[in-house]
Length: 260
Ligand code: G3P
Ligand code: MG
Image 1: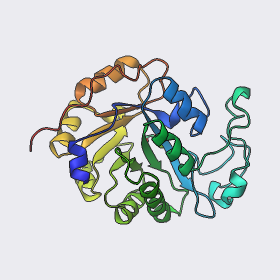
Image 2 (image 1 turned 30 degrees about the vertical axis):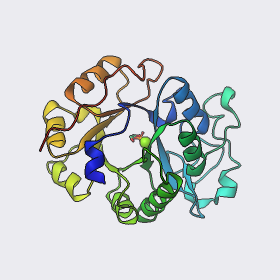
Image 3 (image 1 turned 135 degrees about the horizontal axis):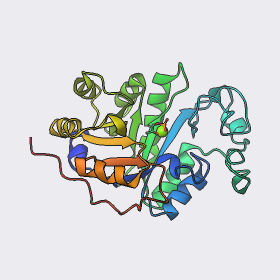
Image 4 (image 1 turned 90 degrees about the vertical axis):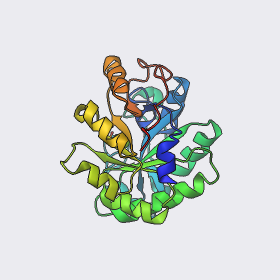
């Protein structure tokens, strides 16, 4: 399925980073709604595990920056995490916004036909467990969905665990830099896409990935001219914060992969 999915890529070309970029508290349901209200039909968000194994949205390994809690994010069970304020740090307008479970976001996204890029973001030491659990949760939550969620991770261990748990779900390898063996790493991980920092992308990298049957995504260009240039290189998915400056439908659909 992965190879076919790379070929018949079903995802929009522009993706709202953490739901709505910086316009709303990242990784909350409100952020997803704001992204949707700006026309975005795909959202990227970060998922990790609570102490009791519940998949929920949070970027950092610790709670301080974006919630009213303290300490490691995986030290508390979901019943305690669910009581935290994940909006006041952003602005008074969003005070009281809760952390969402992956299940809540899946329900919302499916109801509104919004495609999802689930970034598996394990707390340190829980890479394998998180990769497997998030993949299993995603498979159950998106059962029979027309467009499956795209899993991604910076953690090879999490990606491999996700692959083993649910081979059919598409995965993207996140890497901030491109090591010399990046194409081999992509193949070894069995990923449908490379997902990298837009600053390391060139026409040659995009061409080589696509000729190998992989799509190319990048994060997080926020300058409209840079986004247009990346699309001209053939980048298939662009994850941006600038949802209020870059119209969600401003790019043509991704090009077909070259015939092998
Ligand atoms: O998934 C792409 C991007 O979100 C990776 O970086 O730190 O924003 O999760 P980060
Ligand atoms: Mg992310």
